[in-house]
Amino acid sequence: MKTILTVIGARPQFVKAAVLSRLIRHKYSKEFKEILVHTGQHYDKNMSDIFFKEMEIPEPDYNLNIGSGSHGMMTGKMLEAIEGLLLEHRPDYLLVYGDTNSTLAGALAASKLHIPVIHVEAGLRSFNMHMPEEQNRIVADHLSTHLLCPTETAISNLKKEGLTKGVENIGDIMLDASLFYRKKLEHSMSFLPEEIRNMDDFFLITLHRAENTDDKERLTSIVSALNSLEAYTGVLPLHPRTKKMLSKWGLYFKDHIKVIAPVGYLDMIRLESSCNFILTDSGGVQKEAYFFGKPCITMRNQTEWVETIEAGCNILTGADQNKILSAINNFSKQKFEYPSLYGKGDTGERILKLLL
Ligand code: UD1
Ligand code: UDP
Image (cartoon, rainbow, N blue to C red):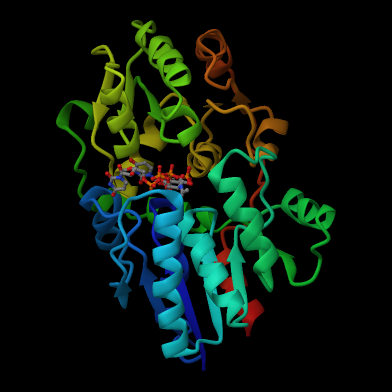
């Protein structure tokens, strides 16, 4: 029996952990034991609890309750607390997902103690070192012993940095989640406001990346673009970071942009599957747009998910008002092919078989 200590803390990590934690507990319980550690980076009910309940993610064994703060403070507190747990439990592996501050803290704490680090979603690069995510993922990759990549591009990114040992293409674990939970939609409750639950002619918006929200000029440009689209209806589940920054700068959306609180994963995939197209700056949502066969307009200057751009169904606009408007008026109306790019939806199984 091998013990895996998994560190999660932010919304996209709950989605990814849901897949592996279920498999470990239901199918591989003789081979693996998981100690689940929630750093508390995300803590609002609709940023954390709802994912554990709806996706049946096991209750974390530890919640470090770190909460929000500056990067250094947050990462430092996590590092100290995770180190304590690693010394206490001495797991065979530490597992982290993606590129958040929780990922960085987990990988660093384990690496210093010579505990093998499994990085799921290794090898992604935006080549923009200003992004906290890029810093976190590069450091995590260089500290990891098992670099589990979602795509061949990720493998080749790692090769250019001299990383070839322990590198595997295992597909994208978010595809497993999307395939598993879409089957649950019919028999699950929706918490969407009535008006939105029955809507069928709208586009979905998510906006939370620091490069957009914390830059007044970029955020103003995005808000102006959306406000000028009165012939369209947009639905925007608003991340708390964005809510804070909109209020700081006195920015508002007009009524055709329906701003709602962040939603749980099931309502999110309900919206993704029923919208006309998606406008986002999220990493995960770009891929989900692909999984659901929806054109995606990405409000960033670079993306790690370059295959979706090459496939033609994702377009980068940055925060440029004119580019956003032109993409919505033209690109979003086109029909695209969505060939399989991210594996078969068996990434969770592949990770555990690989470790065995
Ligand atoms: C983090 C990740 C980002 C990821 C995102 C997923 C880092 C550096 N960034 O960004 O890569 O895309 O999660 O959503 O790790 N807040 C609340 N309630 C919460 C959580 C956050 O009010 O439950 C507010 C706080 O004001 C906080 C701000 O949101 O300061 C930002 O939260 P933080 O976890 O620092 O970064 P995210 O923007 O969520
Ligand atoms: N998501 C959600 N509710 C929301 C917004 C996003 O369930 O209101 C899900 C989304 O479907 C995806 C994940 O959260 O699975 C993506 O997380 P996010 O966009 O916060 O982070 P990123 O992927 O950019 O790191």
